[in-house]
Length: 187
Image (cartoon, rainbow, N blue to C red; front, top):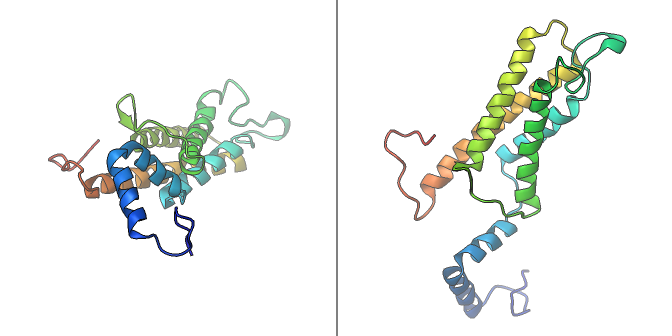
C-alpha cells in the first residue's frame, strides 16, 4: 500500500490530493520536474537507441577490415579516423543523453539551438547511418566489428525515427498543446 505524505498507509486523503493539485498549479516547473523524476521507465524507442548506441560504440573497437596484424577498426588509422569513429561517438552521445535524462533525472533544456532532442537524435542517427552505409559501399572485406557497428547504426536510425514519431504524437495529444501546423510535417 502506498504511504501518503501524512505517513499513513493506504490511499491519499482528500486534503493531500488538494495540496498536490495546488502545488502543481502554483509551481508548474517543479511539478513537471517531479513528474519526470517519477517516470524512469524508458520507452521502447529509448531502449533501442541506448542498446544500439552501446553496440555501435563497443564494436567500433573490433576489427573492421584487413587481415592479421593489418586489421583496422573504427579508431585505428587515417583510413577510418575520424569518419569511422563518428558512428561510435554519435551512438554514445545519443545513448548517454537518454540515460542521463531517464535514469539520473538530469534536467536538460527542451531545445538546443532551436532543435528538440528527438530532432537532434534523428539528425545524429541519420548521419551515423549514412556513414556506415558509405563504409559498406567502399569496403571489400568487412569483418565482424564493422557488421555489428553497421547494425548499431541502423538501430540508431530506427530508434530515432520511433522517438521522433512518439514526440510528434505526444505533442499533438498533450492537453493545452497548440494545434499541429497545416501540411502535417513538423520538421
